[in-house]
Image 1 (cartoon, one colour):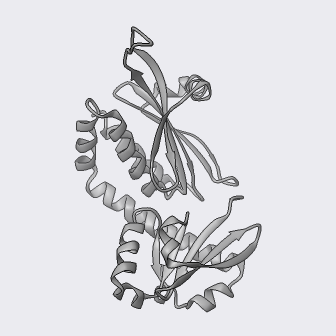
Image 2 (cartoon, rainbow, N blue to C red; image 1 turned 135 degrees about the horizontal axis):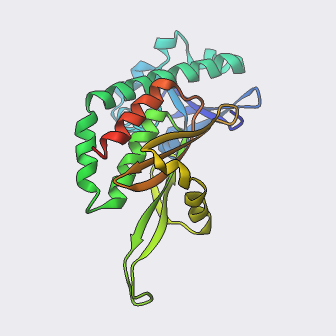
Image 3 (cartoon, one colour; image 1 turned 60 degrees about the vertical axis):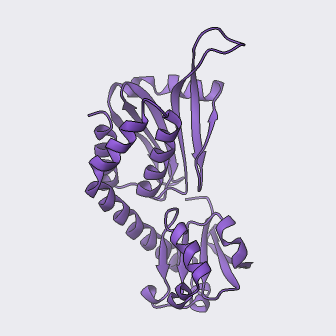
Length: 251
């Protein structure tokens, strides 16, 4: 991947190290723990004893929904030792942490597949935005995506400015929380561009491993969507799990 990977390492209550991996280099800066939740991290490594601090424990519990958490003890390292590692060594630790997190998320989704599907299907007719926001979270965790964007069709109700309903495109994107907004000409052209791929319920349109860019198409209840994600890798297992889940939404 060409984009920077941001790794947090925390072993005390006052500050943590923000490690930036890019262009074969490992760069560090020290950040206050007060800003931990504001950071766009791809993974976090922590010292186990830090969990005894309630405020930090609470932050880490919330953070595990967004990126993998791994204890320094589990990789037999300390913050000082991690910072001295080569780019390749640090990146491998990140990849291993991410893969373990993704695998766990995929197992959980398989175990609760129909429960999640039924919940989303209940949202579909009454709250389309909530449906796609929750789908965004599920896909982000199971793909291990640092960023993810979903483009889908929706109906804009008639108003004082327009006396009839209008078909529009909506995007939901973000790196930590989903942000829905009405699309424009670009999103409409995307839907037109991928129109032929909507003939099947789920399709892996493209995965550029070098750039870490994944494009999926799916159809739920005859409604098409495009899913674009930034991921370091994409396996057949992930594809099978996401395919099964998307198909379950239309069963």
